[in-house]
Amino acid sequence: MVSGNEKIRIQNLHAFYGESHILHGIDLHVLQGELVTLLGRNGSGRSTTLRSIMNMVGRRTGSININGSETLDLPAHRIAHLGVGYCPEERGIFSSLNVEENLLLPPTVRSDGMSVDEIYEVFPNLFERRFSQGTRLSGGEQQMLAIARILRSGANILLLDEITEGLAPVIVKKLGDVLLELKKRGLTVLLVEQNFRFAAPIADRHYVVEHGHIVEEVRKDELEAKTPLLNTLLGV
Amino acid sequence: MASLLDINLFGLFGQLLVGLINGSFYALLSLGLAIIFGLLKIINFAHGALYMLGAFLAWMALQYFGINYWVAIIVVPIIVAAIGILIERILLRPISNEDHLYSLLLTFGVGLIFQGVFTHIFGSSGLSYKIPPELKGGFKLPFMYLPTYRGWIIFVSLLVCGLTWYMIEKTKLGAYLRAGTEDPKLMQAFGINVPLIVTLTFGFGVGLAGLAGVLAAPIYSVSPYMGSNLLIVVFAIVVIGGMGSIGGAIITGLIMGILEGLTKYFYPEASTTIIFVVMVIVLLIKPAGLFGKEN
Image (cartoon, rainbow over all chains, first blue to last red; front, side, top):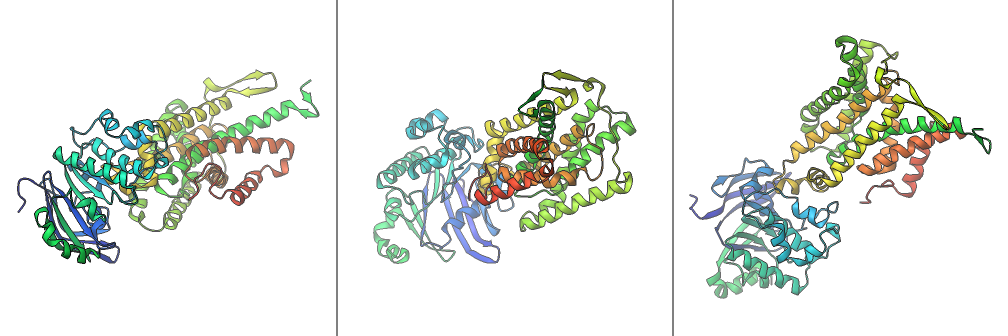
């Protein structure tokens, strides 16, 4: 049963890359305005969960409901138009496009996206380097661009994969501020994150993924009590 | 008078003109191949046959239906593009996830089928297509005589190549094409209908071959083998320019045509091999081609 303010509901999701069975029955849901993280070790299936939502894996079974619509049989390019913005782990900045072209690339999927001027106000570095080749930006700037790109499209469900990976602490802090601001604006975020210290203070709930299963769900108010368990599961 | 340091300028400019015309065809054909390879990673061995099809359709349109050159130059590339779209949707898409060798073999087979069918129907000897009356005659320039139709070929080729380059480098659609060559899956995740773009790109690429075929009909003999003779040279040019490089295909096509023309003047024995010599040298020094990106 999909409740009214659920933006994502995944039930018994199995995903395959060729013969490899990666997800073994993922169940999760994300409510409107929530920031939910997928925690887990490398190779546990967190990124594959996001890629499955975007129909970027070989084969999927189960159910993926977005904004009330079943998407398992939808072609990949139709899913974004349900208001979903995806930011891949490798950031997906196109080297053949400059910063502004990268920013303008995704089509508008909803009418209330940020304007280019607003984006340049939030990320002034992007404005300064708007005619530079996308991949010539620093890692932090590329990450900003990857997030800005989907904010401009109007997506209100953001799937963000390891956005802090390899970035300097000052950039990580800036990303945290951006995510909190997006939460304030009512956007829904499903975040794959390795950096638990980054995720813990900003997330409403956490799912721990292990071997393609959800093995634990932790609400914000349970965080303190369940920290030893999380440390064990995450191998901290 | 027209001789400088033992160089016959009339002869030299004449060969340069021939080279520039050949270069125009090379540029149009290699541009189509480069666009298709860039987005689909398909080496389209049917490209020469589709160029031949363009010339034959123009000839058939005039011969059987009285459709003149000016209508043919608009309609025939569209028909060839539509045939290309059918080839992509019916034959290439089902094997799009297989190794690219399969699509190479498939397009090679399709090219041979076209060639075989036209040889069966029209024979292997060439057919002639008259230059349209509006483009007959020529201009006497200081060092050469420029036939109007040959000037027209250069003009159309440069115009089409220029417009295509502009479309790919400066427009939103071009940004989709360029990004699609890098990561089509991510493009889909952004909500862009990549399969549709792939189909239209293939159609546009082979449409350029059809256009080159119509342009070629009045000056070359229209024959089933006209495409296969040219295809190998065009592939060499695409390799020299860098597989998938749009600007590289255009510039290299024109330069190689001129180089071939100069070789015809200074050392005719090497004129048919000079492009392949350049290809070998480029592959040894810069395997990705002059304008290609190293992976």
